[in-house]
Length: 362
Image (cartoon, rainbow, N blue to C red; front, side):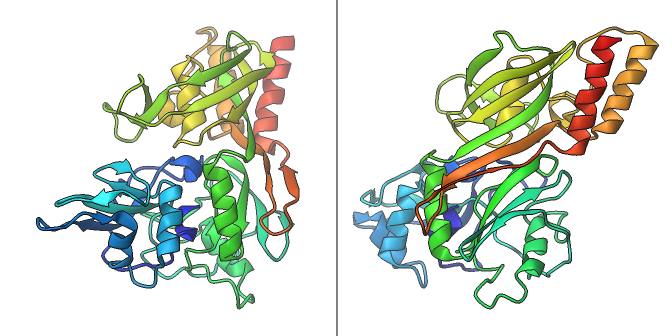
């Protein structure tokens, strides 16, 4: 989303994300899920009061004041750790950062012939159904075999699409082991328009998950700040209202109770890193087979050997967190038409659900 707003790039960016953190979440940084610092400037001791947009235009090559102002509107201009508007006045020793929703690609993106399940495509955008196991962006430990490499191959004969150009490309992300729908912008204008829709929470996103236990009540709203866990830096956690973490809201509804698990629908009001996974764990219902958040343990049911074998078979049938981004809706950036897409529940989650249906009938 955000990298469509700032066009300049340089070699002196600082990436403050943990390279070992699985952050292709999702939950898009549409409204600030996981952000990366691409530029950082520290104001001199003698800095006179100056609007932050003017301050940055003087320091970012090939970037206009209008672009900087758009970045500020999208929450991408950070001063001393907090987002500011374009009229903020920079003071001596202020730390001014420009953040984006993906890390800067360290290496040239090599096109790779990786199959794509394309749900829709026109001259402005593409909607793809990502399979589980496919990393979205190249990064630490995953410099090839990603969705971006697949897109580079798909667009290899399109002279107007440059996979290394941050003004186009993926508008949001989902986790490596989450399947489902993603939208790709093929033009800078499309990415700016779609990015604003995600940031303003006007997109429609619905996920299907299998969780341990049956949530009570069967329809609910989960609200709680999400931030990096203070106990395990590879996890996110829910925190009380305050300065730590970012506001997050998930709506859920039980679709089908299945004994010791349930199929639930989750609708995002915000989009934070691992939001559904963290929120469902927070209310005592981790996603089935979610290794990072404890769902790969037997959390409900008996201690019999037969039951343990059944659960092991379920883990084998769906060897990842049971989460699928099923629907995606937005306004077309060029035509203004409301677009709505749906991707069927993948075979591994369907197999998991069928096993539980059979189990509760036995």
